[in-house]
Length: 238
Image (cartoon, rainbow, N blue to C red; front, side, top):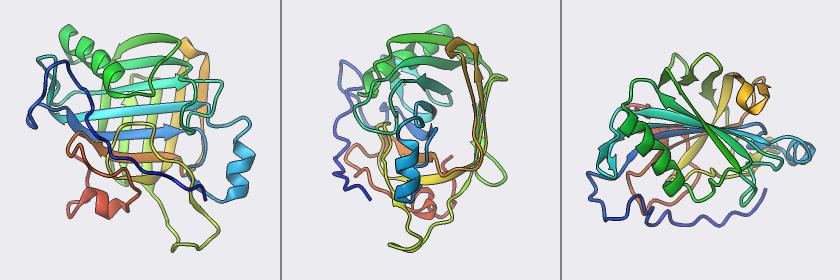
């Protein structure tokens, strides 16, 4: 297992003027990779040369604003395609497509893109395109569901974890997204078809999804926790 140095999330720099706690964008985030995140060393080594080049992130805002624009209730996502393994830190962003909600106003869509660029230090795509589509990010029967238009569909299931040191498997990566505590989930469904990136991504059951909260506690340590610890007594991100 790699040795991680977990850093404090610190100040996010969401806007040019200071935000109160009530104004700070916050909510839930899903980060999906095209490689295993929790696995044995042999699996990780075999995937590193060619896999991990796709990453999908989705945010659900439970509250907050950006540049005076209310973001509460909005959901959006971004798909990236790189020549590098995007699960690794400090790799090239590649090209990206941002999926913006058709239910939002033009000002809200602009604010979402601006917030993405300012709040995620790793996000520097060589080419950025946008699509306005219907978006769903919600609790599903066995986990969480994210869809963007007809081309993106992800549904999670719970990670069947082993005791520390058991099964020969461990956590190899941490989220690229700015978060606090996070957990790993299994994909039950992962279907992505994006002509703008000439990308088709259809991946079977893998432990390749991070789930986390963002913005609620700027000083929270970015550390791995169980789903029960992350979600609390209600066991839900929403």
